[in-house]
Image (cartoon, rainbow, N blue to C red; front, side, top):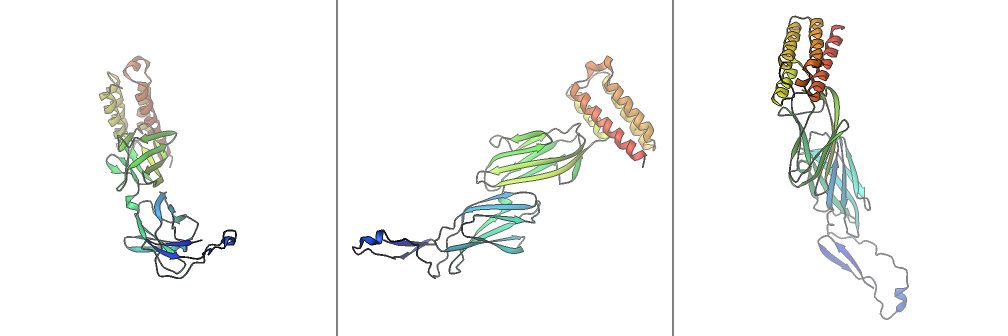
Length: 313
């Protein structure tokens, strides 16, 4: 019977038993040979996958396959500076958690195998800049966690991968799921008109190598007189608002803005209440779609609530 001990990219052959015609060898208890000391580095781990969230990363890998492999060493750095202590994972475990990372920072992860003799493999390096990424863009600018934008601005969900191909991407905002088909698009627009308030988005992007980014981002949708004017212009172009309804709404907004400018928020509130009455004018209902009515009503009510709250402070 022959045992073969595989090492690194070459082979070290350890012939342990010969039968020499003795059949009892085949029924004797079989124990793997004890590792022997050598100076041959073990092979590296393979097929590393990373699942990254806002403040942590989870690594998965295969191997090392050397019979005397003992553990895996994982170190992380950023901009050439080592971060924290190395992580050691014993043979048989092929996953590790890295905590305390920052969502907006790229890292270099180095993984090395160590064998019974203390030999260390050459190592492989994973650059997080090559993992799947996404961005939320409001009015042409990247939306940071905790950021805000007026609801008249377009919100774009964009994904990319610097070294592989995206296979799936989606973002959940409220109870709505927005998915990207990576075969035909790299981004989609999310309509947040009339959705004033605080929101949390949950994004998941995966590439063909099995790497995944799972991040959350919190943001606030706001409105203003200028934002509402922009929405009226948009709705007029799309025919969601037409006819006599347009000048009535714009006039109410102009009056509200004037009252704010002269520090009379109570009068500004009255003009926005008139704005809502115009939206509900049955005689002009044919000049307004339900969608435009809902969006503008929500925005007007949001501003009234803000102004009332500010006036009581």
